[in-house]
Length: 241
Image 1 (cartoon, one colour):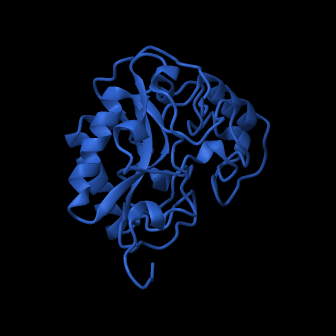
Image 2 (tube, one colour):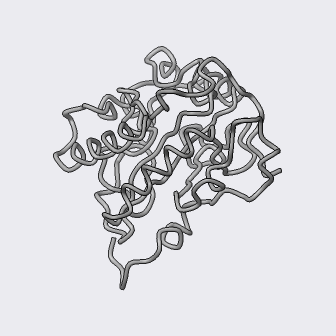
């Protein structure tokens, strides 16, 4: 993206990214933290707290645009951030902990739909998103150690805007945006170009080195391998208090 000079990442994304509000850590269940308390240099564009997402409205349980994770996941993510900084890159997260009530809200929304949406699910009907596996009846996000994210350039240099899914200014070319429900979003998809493939590989390698594993159908989706609460489904709302 053109500009007179490179801007600090948080200023560069000021129009698109909401930073997590500062609240007391003790307001969360033990073992969970707000990402900003661990690393406030990681960009946050929490899509489900607003209306620019595949539902077209805020999702139930998202009362504030804050990324919450287990401390182990937040600290591992901070290591990824530091590994990218030397190359003028950083992370931006789209979703972190997801309340169980939000998962139910997404499923109910999907089951009462119709035609495809070129922005989010161009080749499948809304009422088939659950059957096709794009919207799950349960989500690892509810365990607190799963994150959806991408890499952005601090200089503002970015790939072409994706035709499907969500992106932020300066986001590298990943072939699709976040939450593009399409086979081209599969991490190893050969339907994307060489630059997108290289960027997916870069994200995959950085996250694996920090202890995360990828969900093969979504290049943006990673879960900490040794997550602290693998069977726990949290349901507290994401709030600013």
